[in-house]
Amino acid sequence: MSVHSRAACVVVMGVSGVGKSTTAELIADTLGWPLAEADDFHPPANIDKMAAGLPLTDADRAPWLRAIRDWVSARSAAGVSVVVSCSALKRSYRDVLREADAQVRFVFLHAGEHMVLDRLSKRSGHFMPATLLGSQFADLEPLASDEDGVTIDPSGTPRAVAATALMRLGLSAPSDPRQSTSNGA
Image (cartoon, rainbow, N blue to C red; front, side):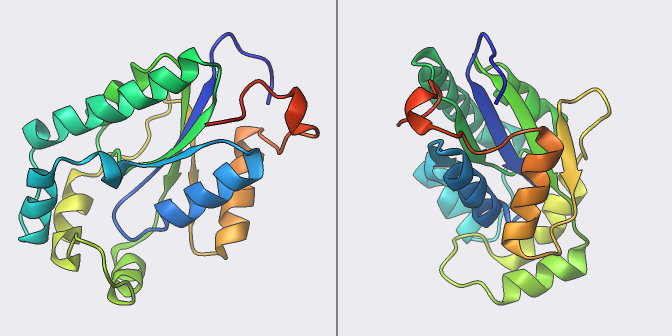
């Protein structure tokens, strides 16, 4: 990673089931950065609503996005760069995350609905039902040309997808983690 005045944050984004968590985990492991799963920041009411098959509103998402932003800022203040797995479907949601005191960059995992439905049909134990996928695609606003990030096809192996994201972002594993000021929890 090049030297910046602020720590970095890589947000792996996209619809549910596209491979955000796996890709984010591989990126975090490669870079030696802490990982936050945005689902862990949802208040219980949001989880209950999604589990009941009801899509979240912008008002439902606002405190959730602010909590993620604040987590990123707290780590950045300590000089710690992070990776976050978060749907970040709309530009307005990404704008909240960009308010973090960090250099926030996005990895948009872009796949068709059929591929994602196939993946969701094989997933178990997640609170969000596949029936909400249509609402996520309806809300999805791909990265605009003025947003700091890359769009990646997630159809390859998870390692290949993560490696492509890192290459396109110009990031690589630190050669000596003891010399990196962006490691740690």
